[in-house]
Length: 144
Image 1: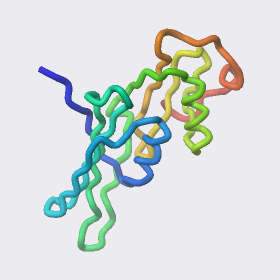
Image 2 (image 1 turned 180 degrees about the vertical axis):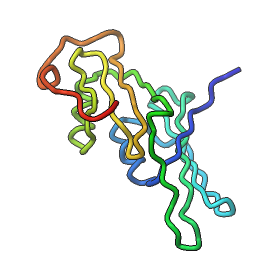
Image 3 (image 1 turned 90 degrees about the vertical axis):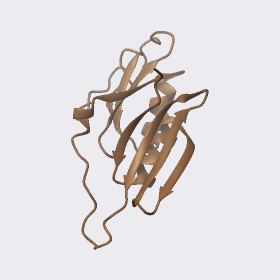
Image 4 (image 1 turned 60 degrees about the vertical axis):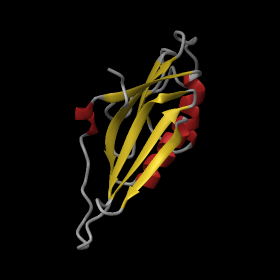
């Protein structure tokens, strides 16, 4: 058996791609399936292309009704990524407008959420960094 990917449904493909781009993932492949009215985009971290996230975007109904709303991403659990520098990663995300729900106060772990409220855990590769400001003083925001 071999791990292939994790699929998450998204309501705004462009905003979700922007989020994962800020996180550092790169698009591996994309399928536009007009007959099924959906788009699949596969993303991976550079150098770890076999561990992929599949974004599934179901196109809005042709009858003009509202697109499906995906909420409660917490019941999914979370995706987890090891990062080379948790402080730089969190700063890049924050500068891009992403809320750091659980700041890396311990130099080891942080949580953020995708535009569809999917929880993402960031873990410092090779053990914790020395705790540093402004992260040490930051409070949790919302749920993570």
